[in-house]
Length: 196
Image 1: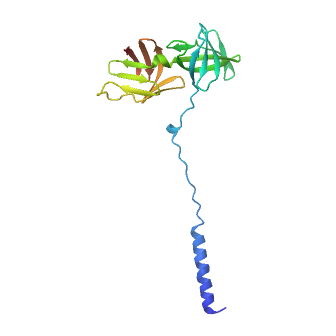
Image 2: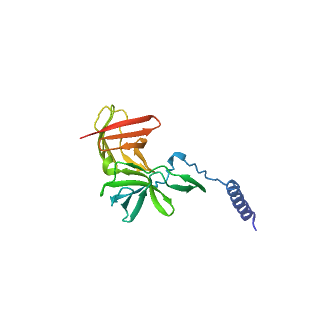
Image 3: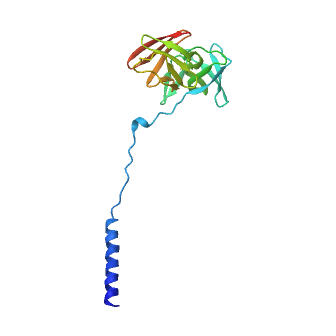
């Protein structure tokens, strides 16, 4: 081996070792999860009311299935977390009329589907007013504000786990009738009247 070949081999070996030396560091990517970005799964069943009676109704779901629901008058109990717990009566808001769109939160009692909360979406649609709000809930999740100077207008709506989300707020529906609606959140109870 000549002196020149020896120097070339030594230079090549030095470059290889220098290149490997820097690659010994293992970079681990960190994954940060934004807890607020994880949305809870919606357990609501959506469909059209069919065969409504005093203590029961059928729901033709958006996927085409038919589910029979009983309504609890407060005399049923369900097993939750291994314990027998008395259930509150079914909460039906907006009435049960054949053909109306419904959102249902249910549970199983002795193998039977029992509606815990029913929101009539057909009754929910329309124009609602209060002291500082004037908006229209439209089909398809749209909300149209009729007050141009409103500081925080509602922009969209949906039902999520039995609660009404009027973006950016979320409410428990206390009362939904033909001419009035009472909603509650952490800021209090809000009364709305239907405007024709």
